[in-house]
Length: 280
Image 1 (cartoon, rainbow, N blue to C red):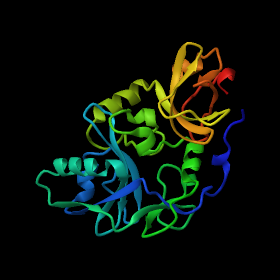
Image 2 (tube, rainbow, N blue to C red; image 1 turned 90 degrees about the horizontal axis):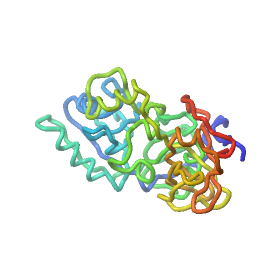
Image 3 (tube, rainbow, N blue to C red; image 1 turned 30 degrees about the vertical axis):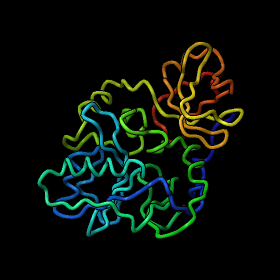
Image 4 (cartoon, one colour; image 1 turned 90 degrees about the vertical axis):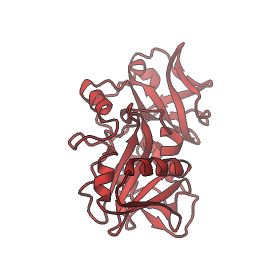
């Protein structure tokens, strides 16, 4: 089956829509960006007004607790995170705040919206993902999820989850979500070790299926060997967590619940991914 071509288009291939599975936390007070810079993976200390960064809060063991977008609104800082994880993330931020003079509050006055162009900041992961901003109303039914899956972009709620994956497995290192030049942050030692040793054996990749994609959590196998696991999906396309070494050595066609699976390397991905003919 042929490769995906969505990434070759010049504008984001989806209509403007709000994302009901995302929610906001607002921070205001003294040195908010410095506070965040000390705990999350992205370098946000010098984030200018109107700019947005992508990153995550990790556990001390280096696994992603919460992925997020951070925006400088001038008088305050907004965090765009998975709605189902928002209250847990807020509790963690309050815990790390200690005695800093920073107000942290849930913000339901606006919703997260995505658009092909012109509204909000350019998505810091990939320009093809358009602009990410705020809205007070709008259509929540659209093809953004189909676009991100085709591009191989993990979703915080449906793919990344909480305390399940290391940043390299979710491609944060390739999507501008990890800083390797700033000072310490929670989980940094594990991230640096994986970066320098190249020990990320698994990566999230886009796949297509010959039929509707099996449910999330269904194994992908080649013969008796498990190659990966299906994550979020839209029709016949899905995200999958794939063991790169096992993929490279696959000798039999890839199957998930009896459905043929084809693995793709996104155009934006700069690492080597060996996909044998039986997996294409």
